[in-house]
Length: 428
Ligand code: SDX
Image (cartoon, rainbow, N blue to C red; front, side, top):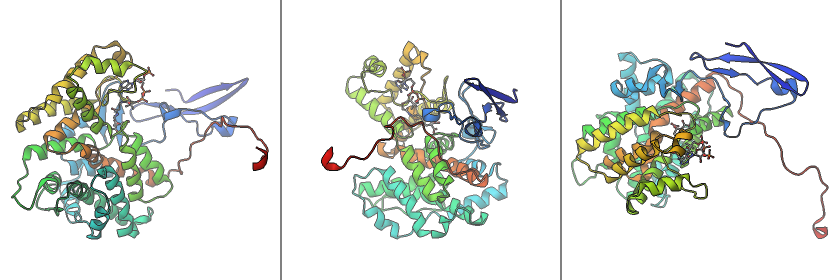
């Protein structure tokens, strides 16, 4: 491994340290470059720039590897449960039986929301998008728990803040959904697992007895695990940069929810289903839509395709595609858009445009098909992504705070007007 890199600018050379990660990734440390040379680097979208070092998640875009604290998502999705993976991501190790039972119980006893949150919900029009409602409710936790505003409080205090949002986000999500329907809110049922409790809050109605389908609960458990973290993606980077200003955990998570909402990011899972429905309504001509996606004059993008990091396949998409077949079969659901999705994937994988640009299905391409089969409405799909990503956001925020990272404040290259004198209004 090289121990330094040299940058030559005009006739001057600058030596920069090189660092190597535990998976042998190499980076040139440019933190002293401007001090030495007066020059900065420029990388719109940070496509080639690392913002931090992190021990939480490792992914290899070429090999399609994704590991949480060293454990492969294939193993975790098969053998673990979401709260165990949550503990692993946040605290770095799989919990002992005693630690796991305490963690699960701590979450259970905090699932209720303050009754005043109903008043906030009732203030939203029924057509409010649940992601906007969710980010608002998360931010409201700073008012109900003002002690959470101090990110430097005791580790026990931080633990309580973490437990509260882990416990309350599913209740908030379910209440946002019920508010949209004009249905009464369901209170949490702590006799159920994390996933089953959420499903019951989402779908139970007072007029009928409700039994959670274990197929749905198991599918949700797997989906939440697969979404739990993904290193420095857009929303996690948002959580980190907001937290770097010593904003509270809840303020940082609320910001992350808003970043995830974007259709180029977590909002893609909703956009995929809307796209597939449009293709279906338009006769199911996948070739036509592949050509639209390739046409630079056409704003249409193949949603759920492409990824900043994965350049051969998204390992999560592979697992979700397989799960989609299994869940739909078990639930006896025949969803025509699944065949359209598979047809699009097949055609794209043999199309030069997609092959040349290394565009493959990502985590959002098939997930919506499972959510839909579970009875979750399309505008709640990105809320499901947020429920899954919450542990990752927490783990990354906690790591950034414990590492005492500096406030995030990128530089720029100015391309505007040079200095000029003010001209009084009547002389312009
Ligand atoms: C997530 O970062 C993460 O880890 C995110 C995530 C996570 O777990 O947190 O994995 C979750 O956000 C998944 C991505 C969901 N978004 C989508 O599915 C939206 C559709 N895909 C894209 O818009 C795009 O692929 C991105 C945003 C995912 C990645 O964009 P990049 O890395 O900035 O790549 P780009 O836009 O520069 O595209 C490179 C080329 C361009 O063509 P050329 O200019 O080279 O001719 O590929 C083309 C793009 O036009 N391209 C597409 C395309 N995606 C990229 N063309 C058609 N359809 C697409 N979907």
